[in-house]
Length: 116
Length: 113
Image (cartoon, rainbow over all chains, first blue to last red):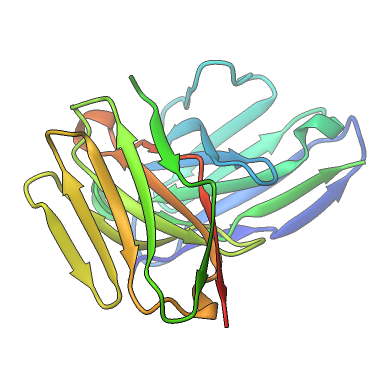
């Protein structure tokens, strides 16, 4: 089946620094990937749509200059949290689907970001 | 119109019992309704999904019931086991959403031995 890998699984960074999170589709190509954020005991909230070879589309209220998304290949999307602050601490999860199938997105295992 | 409302927020069921979680949506353009299971510290895993052209789908102990006219769908877990203890999310999306999923608020299920 489709496998989506995220790296790192956990990261701790100092306030003001930047952190990059990778999302890879291991056995399929993904023209579109989605990035979600999940705070403790809450639901998943879509942050942005990552499109291979073009600019990401951000959901309302998500700062595009803080959350930089790069989808440089058909198997890799990265999310960079710039100038991270404690309020950015969250669980970040990506998803992708083979061939852009709208009905079968697989989620990665998530990245726990803690900003101290 | 993009909301998906999920209930209950938490659920305690005895081993062997039936767990029932309900969701309601507003946007009739949704045409894909998946259920995800999430364990602490892990990403959500697809359990079962349904399209609006059928009213029920069963996979093992998991069944989705779908009521298009009421804009509601539910997950039934038969013979619930302690290993089923997790958080369950319903979601809605599909073609008109370009693959985006709108998630319900989640239900924390605890199955007591």
